[in-house]
Length: 395
Length: 126
Ligand SMILES: Cc1ncc(COP(=O)(O)O)c(C=O)c1O
Ligand SMILES: [Zn+2]
Image 1 (cartoon, rainbow over the protein chains, first blue to last red):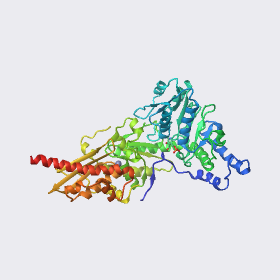
Image 2 (image 1 turned 90 degrees about the horizontal axis):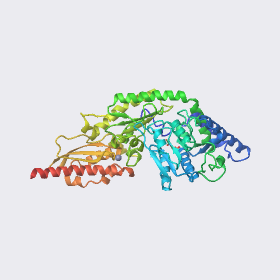
Image 3 (image 1 turned 60 degrees about the horizontal axis):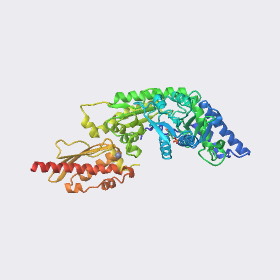
Image 4 (image 1 turned 45 degrees about the horizontal axis):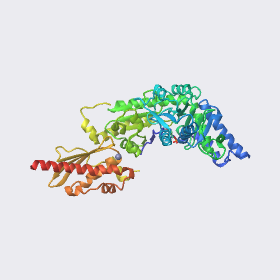
C-alpha cells in the first residue's frame, strides 16, 4: 500500500502531539487523586481546574458550569435523562429531531418506555430543522428541546440560536449535542441561549473516552452517576485525570486555530466536492451546500452500494465511512439519509469523507484520482446501472 | 473483518458480466434491502456451460456472487440446485455472522435462474 489517507475525522481524530505531551506526566508523576488533600492531590486538582477553565472559555461558559464525563454519549444520556427525571412534575414531553445521533435517539426511545412523550421533528432535504416546527411542537408539558448543533453524517449546521431563543421564550430547557461542532465552529452558550451542551474530546484531536456536559447555572437536573463528591456531587467517580488534561489542551488549541483551520478545511472540502461532481456522473451531495461542517463531504453514488465503495477505497489506503445498511450491520440504511428524503437505494450508495488537520491538497488530489475508477468498476458490476444506461437520470 | 479469499473475490470477481441470449436469468433481492443479484446462464445438455453475474451490494454480496458462479460452472443443473449458501460461505473461508444473509442471495439467484430456464424449456416443449 503506497499511500494512506485518513478521511474519517468525524469518526475520530488522532491525538495531537502537544495534547499527548501535556497528558503524559499525569500517568506517571502527577498521578494523585484530585480529591486527596496532600500535594499529589492538589497538583492533580490544579490540572483539572485548568482544563475546566479552558473548556469554559471555549464557548463562553463559567468554570462551575462544566462537568467532565466519559465522552459524548454519556453527556447526551445525562442531559436528557437528568432533565427528564428532575422535571417530571412539570411535564413529560421532549422535543428532538429525527437526525440525532443514536446517543440521543436511543435515550429518548428509552424514556418513551418510561412514560415520556417524544416528538421527533422532521428535517428538510438539506437536513435542516425548521424553528417554526419546534415552536409548533411545544405543549404545556414540554420540558426539554434537544437539537444537535451539527450533524455527524451530513454535516448540516442547525439554526441553534433561533431554537435557543424559542426555548428561552417558552421557559423550556435547551440541550444541544455539539459533539461534532465543538472545536470546529464558534459557539457562545450565552448568546445562543444554550442550557446544556455535550462535547467529546476525540472529535477535536483530544483523547477518546472523555467529554463534558455544560450545564447552565440554575438548571434543574439529576446526577447521572451516583457515588463520591466529584464534579460538585453531580458526576461521581475518580476523574480521568490524563483524559481531562488532554481535553483541556485540545479544546484550547482547537479554538485558537479555529478560523484558520476552518478556512483551510472548507477550501479542501469544496474542492473535493466539486472535483468529484466534475469527474463522476449521477452523484448527489447530501446535506447543505454551505451550512455545513468545514470538513464534511457526504455524497451518494447511484447504482452502487456504500460498503463495496469503502472496501475499494480501503484497498487504496483511503479511510472513509458510509451510511449503507451493510456497513452498519442493520437492515436499514442511515436514519439521517432517509430523513432527508433519500430513497433506500440511493442511501445505500452513500460515502462520507471527513477532512481534518492532517489532510493535504495532495490527499484531495489522490482521492480525486482513484475514486472515479472505483465507482466505474462497481457500476460496471451493478445490474441497476445496466438497466438504467442510456436514460441516465439524476435524483 | 473479511477473509483474504473474500477480498480476492471482491477485488477480482470471476464471471462478472452478462450473457447475450441467455438460457436462464434470475434476479433476487431489491435495492431497498441493499443487495441485488442477477445471474445469467448458458445451459447445454443439462450442464451449466457458462454463467455470468451482476451484483449491486456489499463486499460479501459481490464475493459470494463470484464464488457461487465458480462453484456451479460446469456442473449439472441438479448439482447446481444442491448448492447451499453455507457451501458458498465455506468456500470463501467464512463470512462474518451479520453477512450471512448476503450469501443467501447467491444461492437464491442461481436457483431463480435455473427456474427461469426450466420454465422456458417447458414453454418451448409445449
Ligand atoms: C453527534 C454525536 N453525538 C455523540 C457522539 C458520541 O460521542 P462519544 O463517541 O464520545 O461517546 C458522536 C460520536 O460518535 C457524535 O458524532
Ligand atoms: Zn450485504
